[in-house]
Length: 290
Length: 316
Image (cartoon, rainbow over all chains, first blue to last red; front, side, top):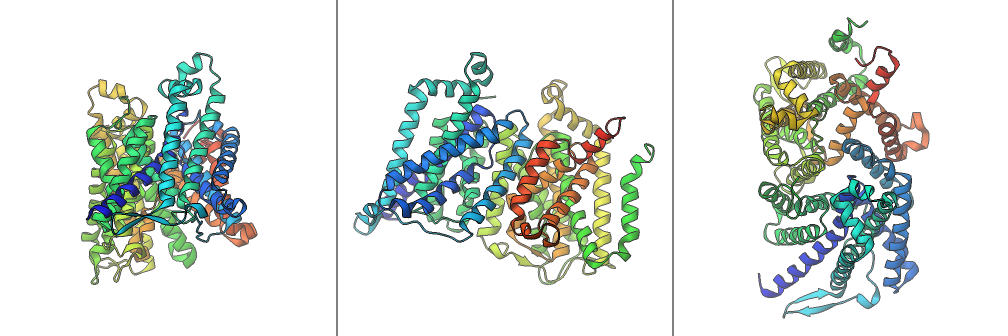
């Protein structure tokens, strides 16, 4: 592998990892704070991708405006969904949560098929991000992918600042480490739950919107992301955002370089990584011992 | 009525065996399918209902059992005496690997890890050429053993019925055994079992491997019936559906797994048939999804739970 290819693959790995982080951070927060295992989280990613497909003709080259509008819509959707559905899951055991969110996936998939059909669609990157730049003597790298990584980094930093520097973030961290104590301190836990859930949905949908121009938009795209995000959460440790970041990047590198080095068995790489982490630290890289 | 109760499953089996010759091919085929799914559901009941381990990756063992059968029978076909132990053995071997790792975690982690390892097995069959890639592979000759030839529909029916009875009987024995009592103890209070000196990890792993082997049995029967396997057998939808069956029937009862398998298969058939629900049949995922949510929300104890609520004496 020459240095140009290596650089391109590194950039791809980082970009994929960061995108996973957006989805996985919402998943890990929702589990860490509310104790809900949400199989339908991948559907929010799919929702974002289809939103990008549906909204991009309306917004033209106003790509950033479209992202903001999409995030707002997704957050409202998440807020309503928490109120109408997920708030009833908190008292139930994990088995019932698994089955009810599984039922929700079927509903989402069918609604998607009714509204948008079952075809595979492509989404064009905005005109000002088309084309690519030279990397080394032979390789070129598309501007859009660089933009995607940059956007994810901005979001990750923003997430860090919100969680570590604001009052809301303090409540979120407290909720992740001891739910009952937060309730005991007189914090309106239902409101906190609703905000965290809406934020999780918005992050997953944003990841879907950013990913849409790079991967095509297709039925069932949520499931594969969901399972990889489970792997990320298991590796990183439940409820830990730094853990999710480290694990996402690890998974990004293992998956990308697995595809380059062992084409056929590449699908297994991330699971082998998970197995190693389970042997070494069953509670995840940054998880707390239970 | 109460005194008859323990014999009810056996009675059902005898009635099925007597009815077999008069069933129409469509019904007979449907019954065989449901019986295979019942074995699959029973194997998961051992984990979820008896031991309290919620696995969302059980389809992997089912699929591996089916693939092992087809791969080993090659172009010549093979003997049941060879293929059946092989199918159950390979499913059990993968269960040993998955169980040894995933049982280091608990609760929600366990759910995610079992799902992830099942997906890994799915990718092996989907992406590599071991099992014909995403198209799957056909079985040229169905398994035989002396006069028993799985090519015949009638033989299939009785072999599957016998396997179901054997599986049910085995699990009923396990429930009554010391091993089963230990599993029940782990489900109720694992900490206390550990304090009482039980090697909890070993018991859970044994249950996991046994459940994997029985799922492999269901996979073997499915391969022998269909004569074809594809990676979708291992897909996580199958793991989700079998989990649904046992909760739909009623957790904690062996017969719940069978009732659930029957009910779920009927429900799915009903919701996707134009004759019953009209144009909604094209959107069966929507109605099935809503039905699943409603069932779990309203009937957390499953269909057996309704019966228990109706009878004043309490549970069966």
